[in-house]
Length: 201
Length: 201
Image (cartoon, rainbow over all chains, first blue to last red; front, top):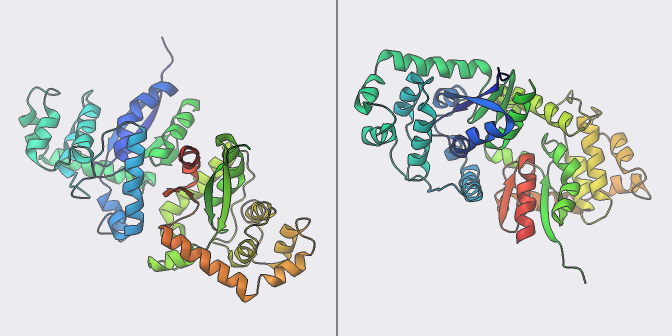
């Protein structure tokens, strides 16, 4: 039997800008380090609210926001990822988060997540819209409409709450965050450090 | 004549935690990329105050602060840099900043800056104390007491103000920040990206 791969948790929020490049490259990076990835969708909104913020800090602090957009554009260019600054920010990620949480263990979930990120940060689409979510599910599940409809059930909502509460309990305060063993690594920049830590545990 | 090296500005604040590893490795990284470094001391305090913060965000948001200290410890271990969490944070960096600003073009300034960082983040010393600053100047200048005393002159204070205002004008909101051409790179993590950018300009 081959040795069991070390797994690294990837905590992401669909509205989070730096989660976009992280989502697009996390699987390839994990492969390189011999790790596996556990995708963990959650909501940053309630965490920001606990800190007294009712909007993204990138909107509250415009100087920081200006830097972030330029940095993200530069980063995506270096990674050859398509990027188009969303005309609305932050977009409402809750409906997509419900789908991802309700199907966290499914093999298709990471691909669904990547499509939602692409819709938000490259196609400038409203990821809260049913039509956009149906397109993101298309070809991944037998009945996209049923999956979308089921994501409005109390169980899906409970999973979102559960994940977000777990994120808070872990000390997560931003996205993306990687968890390797007992250690947190915050930011797309720290993806490699997390994998490096993960593989030696 | 050898081609003139591209220069990258290194903006640092003596109380800033991630500026410590950046200060210790910036010259070596610049060498590797064929760049030169311009050391730019400034004060983050007035910038934070403009954002409505009267303390370090790492103190205002304890969850973020807890992460930062663990992350810094881990980072210093990986870089084999001595680290001891300062018993006081943030320390008052103004007196050291005056010295660094008044002697910004001197060859010994980077070594002085590294000693101040070591005092703060590895020796747990109060970098606002004259005795500590005299030790940091020792062997670098002929008359440390005269340099310390001159740093209380209006000209030195004006340089600190000037640098901090230039930082604000550049859109700097945190430290360390690297400036390569027209581009900002924020954070110790982005040192290599800044050098990469700098060398191609």
